[in-house]
Length: 383
Image 1 (cartoon, rainbow, N blue to C red):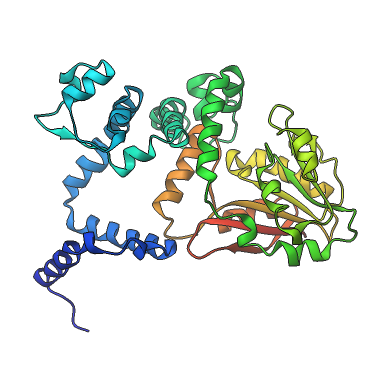
Image 2: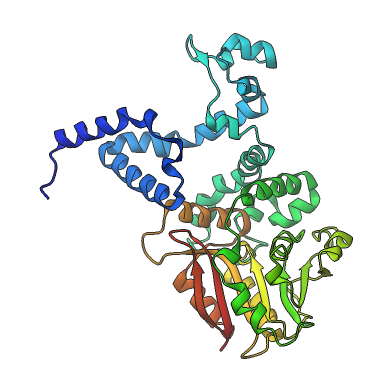
């Protein structure tokens, strides 16, 4: 097939764009296909945008979008637009007490968008607050921090980028200022809504439930599982109701013990930097734990877990992002930078996961994922 000329390409694009409003609502129900299309369109946009336009729009001014959004969120401006009716700057000012000249950029009206509607959800609004107020100072300090430390990967949460700004790591700051932790938890709860459960990519029934030694044995130990959301979802499937389910976390993080007990879940206070007390379980499960920590700390967590595993029987399941070794998507790269700035942690590539687990005597049997998603379940055994 002959390549299209620039004129033909533009004509084709104009034809497609002119029909966007007439597309059926379910045209993007295939989320994987939608993401591929977004990636290709982003590539096209980058090709037709001049380098200096990208420098200005993506490097100089991108932070200002977050600043303006935070002002509008905390000022109540988005609330005024929530009814879907056009508003003038005077309308917004009158409703919120802001000065009209601060709101207005020219003589125009304002209308809520799908983005501002999403920010009416407390969880998403708290996501902006978390990234701006909690992570923002560390992000702004990151270039100076890395320069001062010879551009080395941070390995100590006590002296990492976050502690360099705040004087303590993120977990201690949550304890000192509980409101920060509440904002973060609200954001995480909202973020996890509608996400793929690990059992949708990992065949838990075949590889765990059908191979447990005894119906009275421990099936899963959910390490650092917080309120127990993962196990609560797991037991909804009748095929998963075999063996004991143990939820472990620090006392302050554990969910309602009595409610968990009625669902067949045992709550156990545990610090994953200490020896694992549950020996010989069928599976030890870690969800979004290791990306919070640098390699040195991860080796401690993994070593404690490996010491409790039974060779040839127990499995370690790590529910995390697995980045490709090449062509890492922007989302994965940004998440990696976020973990470094806020947690002194990291997102890891497939090769990095293999190296990390091998360093503590564990071998990856398989990485289970769905489609083009980065979310994966790493299944590992003792070497």
